[in-house]
Amino acid sequence: MTEDDSPLRRFWIGFRENKVAVLALGVVTAIVVLAVTAPLIAPQDPYDLGGLSLLDARRPPGHSGSGGYVHWLGTDAQGRDLVSAILYGLRISVQIGLMAGGVALTVGATLGVTAAYAGGFFETLVMRVIDLQLSFPAILLALVLVALLGQGKAQLVTALVAAQYAYFARTAYGAATSERRKDYIEAAMATPLSRWRVVFRHLLPNCMPPLIVVATVQIANSIALEATLSFLGLGLPVTEPSLGMLISNGFVYMMSGRYWISVYPGIALIVLIVAINLVGDQVRDQLNPRLNR
Image (cartoon, rainbow, N blue to C red; front, side, top):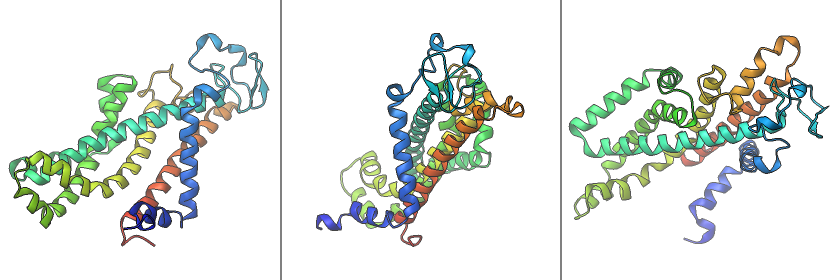
């Protein structure tokens, strides 16, 4: 196989045929760069309470603040510059989405593949629990867990992982059940290799394509769930300006005409979620030849 025929190159050639998906990938990349560099490029540190002034609270877009710079998107009720708050909010959203999605992928994929390989009572028990959990909405389970665990980033990620790992487990189980019957797995089982090595070295890697597709969807869902929980006051504490918290803080001022406090963070949240989903749709089409148009 030459370099031009590599799977990665063929994947990219097919991916870039969808101009909307390429644009969405560019948006996601730009948002990640902005989130990573937020402490360097944000005009204000929204965590620094000493740098905030109530005199700048609820100022409209274009207002010149007491800090000596222009609030291009206005300020919120605490006097935080919305550009800075949105940058830090995107940083929190990306962090939580990647952490919750990555841990849920690891836990769910391991559980689903192991159940498919082991079979018997363990398979039946695991899949009945997974099916039972999938019968409940993820947001309902996340609400209950956050209420029990309390506020905080670690507690929120734990609740999101517990609410979402079942999707990865069900996908991994379906893929592993199909792969389990193939000749290369039977040949590996006939060797002195341990069962765990067969699972993690041979079976799991061949189940990754559908799991990657699910991961893109669940990362976007994690971001949306975090925003929903923070909007309801059950996610991150008020000292961390997540996008959901910013929308919640400005909601009470909508009727008084101070739309910018909620609208601009809401736009940033929608753009991030939609862009990730568009990228995920194209990844799904490329990894599944029957859907590849």
